[in-house]
Image (tube, rainbow, N blue to C red; front, side):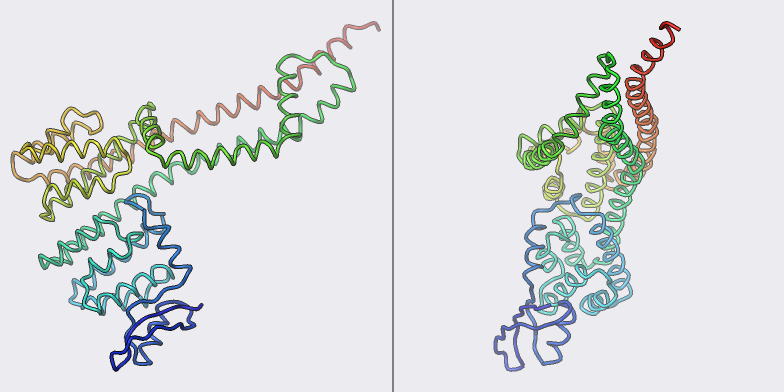
Length: 410
């Protein structure tokens, strides 16, 4: 791989060239051996990856990204706690990391810290890996001299986020598998089974019931115009994806999610638990409340919760407690509102919220299991009804033919 780098030689002269190396980490080691101090190293592929990820927010990371971040935070916290200097800790993590993308990110962090930049500032150069909340908590730890404590809180925060994602994904695997099987069975019957029976019906010149005619028509459309259907689905999919990125599309999506009977309850529960945990962790780090609300809002994709956080910020600006905006809102569960109000009265909002979020996480796991427990039999029932309907529609003309033959002259 060819990498472009910039740096300084032993005489302080600026050097800019390229080097062939498997990755940025090994290139940096090779350049250090030449007596060069590297300030930046890039490849065209990496630049594209950073640009595409620069607009990501909390919760929009892939599962592997969250897992890598959790592992990185936990390992860095252990090393810093044992007294290892940051540069040495990053170098050790760079050697241990198996993921090439994370290895490159850690190498870049190490270079920036060697230049004298703080760890939090170096992390801000990688918004696809470290969001604003992460960087601010690291900055708070550096300022207060409690970086290991902040890294421990971040490790807990990312681990909870990874656990939530795994819980949701794991619960939806089987229902999604059932849907795929159901769609596959129906498509096979419409494109492979029905056309053969259609030829038989034409040969026998049988009168067909309306349901059979409808299925034969649908089968003919699928077999003759399958390319039109696939093209239409692709266009609709791409159009929907871009529409959901617009303000109107986001509003429609999140409003629909909150309005659906079971999905709305799950959405509220998980969003409330996440906001409560972030609020507790950030307030426990002694960050200003207005900055805390801004950070949480920046990482909130749901526009309804973003507006609620704006209202909370306006209430705090007027000198009112933050619970004023949350109380009475159907977006926040009453237990969380009461925990905030009780914490404000006792001066222990952060600890009250952290205790409450542990309870909410347990409730959310039960809620997800209950939801999937309802979905699975419903999908099986719907699949059985559809397959039975299609089978009955196919065999009805044959039953009529048998009845006509039995009632004929002997």
